[in-house]
Length: 337
Image (cartoon, rainbow, N blue to C red; front, side):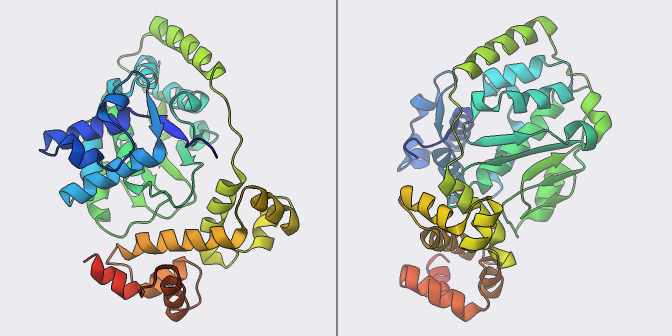
């Protein structure tokens, strides 16, 4: 891909301002990240998702609090979200607001894929990101989900609590605290992110609804959408995501993934070669990126990490990790302690 997939910058802008109010400087927050506060403050500005993710990860590094994004999300209002936020606030009810997020997802995000196919039947609001697995989206997604859940509660006549909140990424720390924040069970390591609501709550009226304004905003969103190019999914990203999904099942191999994509192994290998990479390169890169991420979580044993990465035993994982980095997994864990 020549251009990095972008997302509405307001998330990064507001979280940066939040950290600055806590006493950190703009340089503390954004040093080494390819965005500026001024650039994120322009109306409807978009920045690469990996830079947004880096801002939220920096927040954890600065504060030592891996719930800092969630706490920020509890207080953030939809009015800070620009066009899509105003569209939500003017919608007639909760269901219509959520359905419009799917219809106009490309207005505010290039790689975000919203799926509302089970919203009206099962109350499931589902989404994922068409991005390389190597980008650590955990903090960004948790904060974004929190601001959606709490922002929505400010728009309806009574508080609504999700049935459950579910994330693609893995987490083994502070889950009980996160469940207290959301007021419901929270699960990790699932195929997609999704928030499940009671169907009766989808019928709640938005207190700030404005039919005339909503129609104007819908027409504007349609015009913006018409001018927004629809990019085809990148074969490399598709394969990376499938590798990550198949690691623990033992099916993270060229033949199985090619079959799942409806092509021969030879065709998939050729397409990856045309993209300047190979299946084994992607497999190794994903395993290394996930290994480095998991090793930061001191509650995860090396045997658990080996299993999640698709290795039969710890020694095979340790040998591969030393080949990648020159260090044993334990040495890396000791260095980050």
